Length: 640
Image (cartoon, rainbow, N blue to C red; front, side, top):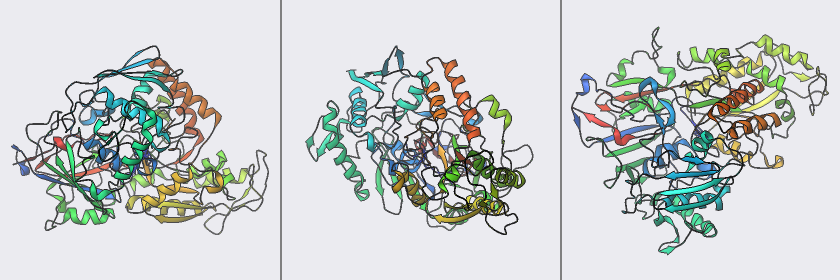
């Protein structure tokens, strides 16, 4: 998963991309533009009905949600939706593409048509991947089995620099990787494994790399595609080149693409200009745009001001409507009427395949660290999050409560029937929160008149808990990403609700990069180096490129995406049961058992899943929207 960001941001990193964090995805929660053209949509009368070729689309990025890193073997610090889904995938296609179906039936499932390879086949421990024969790199070389091995060898050699690594997962769980011929790759999986999991969460991470990149310097050829020992120097060279953003448009390395786009330029402010790849070997519609520009913004309101301004020097073709400015949906509808100031746009709503939450820092070594480890405290704290109030308030009627560790939108067969039926099990109740704290030894001060302190220290059932000293205050710092209005409103409400039961939350507004950096740096360090953060909120985690929400990426012990370092033996046991279930039926049951259990453990603070409110120009066809966050502007076209 990529921990990943939304406008609400998605911190995706297979390290944080949200592999999800930053997904992730990662990746922020609801207003990210997650458009993908998966099927035709008629243009409005104002825009005409005749498709035309060519043209430039100006696409508005969410606040501080900009491309910064081009090399698709992405390190943990750059593992975000902005880098992977909205940049790298446009240039370099992953082995398997996800996001299929149209309209309300769009799901985060494998898209066989857009994948570079046919679905893998399994025989015992051996996996066979057969590449489609029609894909080529822009330098004329075919996308081959050796390109896949090149990637897998890089993973073997540089696993510490791979943002999506999960202990026990790829590449440590495979051996005997071979290019059997030009289009066939085989490998053996070590130990028990679920075929669905291996396809959707392991092979989904692979992006074939051209042999033209197998160099240690300009003209200095290497053999990483055959010898793992050669990969370290190749990685060092490519990573160094990827740090030079100003060279992206002229680099002979990054100009070798197999996707439908190539880079013209990227500047340090985040403005990305892409041109159509004239040598793209995939299928393009008869009419399509030829230039795609992503433009940066520092806040939602800055983007909204430009969106409404017909005299803007660089008018937005595809943007988003902040929920705090959105029309309340009419009864029986999922979207309201567009504001009059946006009469030249069509408004639509899409829910990304993600999890909206913020983590506790279970590695925190201050006096508050042991408090966050207590389940009763997490239950009390969740009772202070008014998900429904946020949805009806700053989200203006848009959004769904997060009810556990598996997303509920869009509807999939991954969410257990029990959780689906239960819904939000922790609605706002300051009375219940206060009662839980009192029954566990806290002197509770209500109505915002003071801060609770531990009155009965100890490990008994009616005491504060192990490691919590008498007099310890319930006082916490919450760092959060600025720029998204509804999220800032949600933080203010949580601070107020908590004060009513004597919990003092000190809000610490930061840029999204600072919040994510603090969290995911800490997750990889020992406690003395863990930093001072206690709770951190950036938005959401996108289930990508681990599309099955099995928990190993986001909640697995040792995963770089487990930003809060949540560890529990039962959690590990139940996750492994799903990863090892060979039959689809056993896998599904194991997944349900795990999520039903973990939902009650509250390893993170659940926040509402906010949708993306997409504004697209009436004379622009963008197709249906893909909940898997993959973006395909090559399928868009203007109408006259």
